[in-house]
Length: 84
Ligand code: FES
Image (cartoon, rainbow, N blue to C red; front, side, top):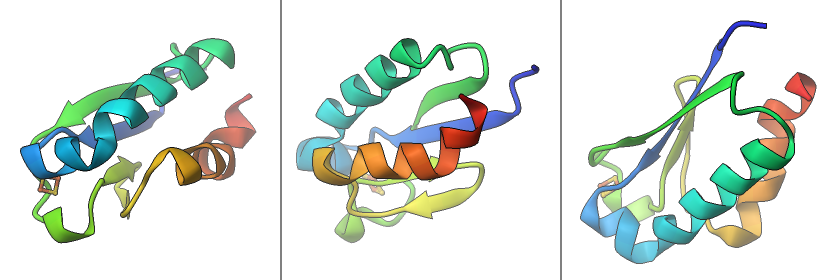
């Protein structure tokens, strides 16, 4: 299957200080564990202009706000579950 999914995590200073650093690690591990590395392009983004609602994550153009370690797994399951 080609890489049809694109996920961007905001690495702007506000999102980063709100915890995206930990979310990045979690997502990397999730993609690796589920063998999704070759199906999902995962990259960092500059500030998405939604700082006050961060940390922010974008999956295929859909923005998820306030994403912490408590929410990220469910979001990944919902959005990427059918790739597994
Ligand atoms: S730093 Fe993430 S939206 Fe601004």
